[in-house]
Image 1 (cartoon, rainbow, N blue to C red):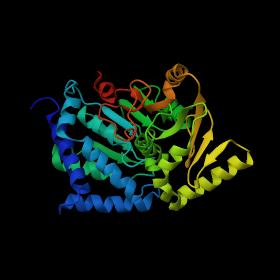
Image 2: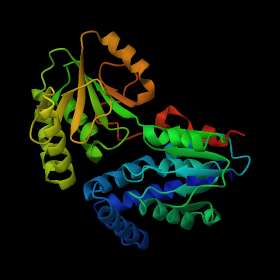
Image 3: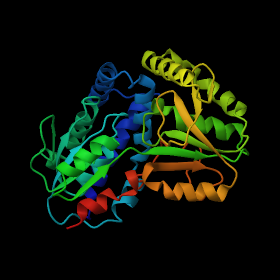
Image 4: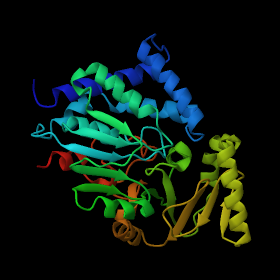
Length: 344
């Protein structure tokens, strides 16, 4: 066996399972049935995990976990040299948000103790069970817990800016990756096509905007006309039928109106002029600019708050509609997880 052969084989099998699940001609299979049941239960457990968002998540991971991309990703790294005990504190803002960390842990030979989010307790354990069915040697590699994490060599913990302070104190004596609040940012110059804007709306609205890669702030030229963007948003109008989303929309709109905030809205989405990169549900902040070079400097200055940038006018940005399709090497917070885990 060459280095990472087991991981390539197992991750490829997982990708095939997810592709088979999301295909129009879904095959009859025990694991397909188990996945179907888990997704129904996950949707019942978490109101934000709608069928549409769960199906999207399965489809994206199915596309991502193909043999070529997995092989290209893993073979750039050395084979694991020693067993490492990894503690992972998982987030639950979008489905399977911790899967990449678990895959990195398995690929680097770690034994993993994962503290699940109460918002997503079902999906990742099922995925791990499937991986073990493909690679029985991994039977005891991953343990999920709701208890205090105590035995570990390295830590990956994901949370908000507030919880990150606690993580940094609690895990300060061990090598760690602590992830804080980050957001997606879009830079527009007014020359975007309707197709560009429709794709941008996906970047904003997928997962109700709850992902760290969701676009929550727009940087637009002074005098920007939002009419074309509102036209592109119209296909997402049914989001207001989701009760939790509607409650957030109504509450935030009422607060903004009472505060006499500068606000643009269309009955299901708001744009609020605000320099903050992090916006609440059913709202996206925007700021205006007159000099694109100043925007680029701002992006550089606020890099630690930004997960990804989408634009046609900024170098090295994601294309519109691609923020929720990260590659295996697009590490969260731009920190190479595999290199961290493989480091002696």
